[in-house]
Image (cartoon, rainbow, N blue to C red; front, side):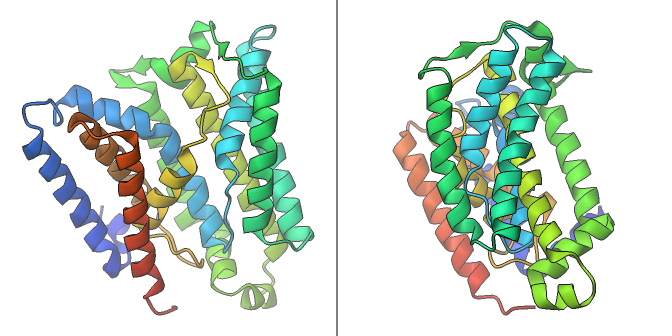
Length: 314
């Protein structure tokens, strides 16, 4: 635990205090509505699982000094492709197809950014639109049900030793993401590239390869999030993931990852994702509309970005 908190910048502790305060506030205000019950907390954790998975990828991308706006479209394409493949093939083939689609889109983004020398903001904004259209064309706006019980249980609605599979996926993704980010040479290269690409290149780091790889990783994690959505909902639809981009960015920025690169935290992304889930759940129980949730998320991003940009460069 001490090692984890050493990875959190001191100026970010307010985020964790804020998480506890918001949770406590909802627990008091909604004590008669079941907010703090174990079943509701499990529900929040399951609902935020896909967002957490995407947030881990976004931490890697932002740390390297890039951004990926196409994750929502990748979710839809990957989920739909997996659902379509499941009609005729075994579930491993569907999983490979779904993850492969995410990797391919991520590779397209990475190639244009790293080797085409184009801004990641503009590249992923363009591919977001392209693949949102692809998702709509794939099944002519029709939902695709998934009737494979193993797939649904493994990726969404099952459990192991009393823990829902979505929570297990969250724990595995956070553990692996944290280890690679903090304990490997690749993670060190991410930070170096985000701090100063020129200095990183001078030390022999393959800057273009790092930029390419983070976008491929982001695409694959977005595809995994699509599979988690499909498993939980027992089907896929073109609307999956389309509202997640703002939530993912909010979770990552609120969690302590800098927009201008060089610094981030996987644990912070998890806390930020759970904070978004708690906020949405609490507002719903209080009777607020989805539009109010969007306003709340936007305000949180504004506050977090203002705080981040006011910090001196390290």
